[in-house]
Image 1 (spheres, one colour):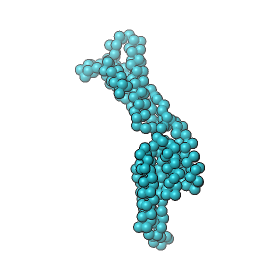
Image 2 (cartoon, helix red, strand yellow):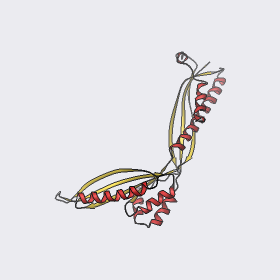
Image 3 (cartoon, helix red, strand yellow):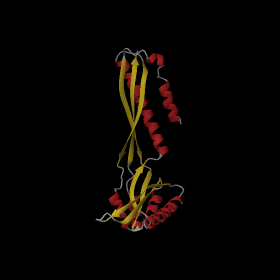
Image 4 (cartoon, one colour):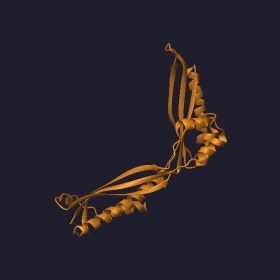
Length: 235
């Protein structure tokens, strides 16, 4: 909250009124400043996939539903997990005479948590019901918000300093802000995403190895950049 108040006060001290903004006939300067903050990815996201194939569409779907429900119950028993059902699809397989020979039903379960060990254990404990299809890392909402506020404050401070310096260098004593736009961008650094083929191969590994392998995966970092696009009038 203090960071937000600080940013607001920073802008209030130099923003001009709409009437003043209309007098833009001379001494106008536009420029850009940016600042970035690097934060650790503190959230693990896993995608578990259930797949069944058989001749009866109803039986195949029933088996998938039972396995999905088992994984969901196991995941939801940990209150720190955020759990949701993902995509589900059913499609037929045909022979050369265009006759349906079998049905395949697939379903996803998505789970995320800041407790990497517990989530890795869930993946291992669920290997008889679902294969680990994907693993990726992200930043939790609170940590993300703090980083955005920090980058915003740094970018605005850099903007104010540059505006003051340029005004003095050009022989002016002060400036008024005509317009300021804040634009965010994000970039992953050293973050690991497990490709589907690699994840699928883990389905055949032991539970102990599977959990260890996931836990040792580097969560990486995310760079949060805040850019200030500004126009000022010097006087």
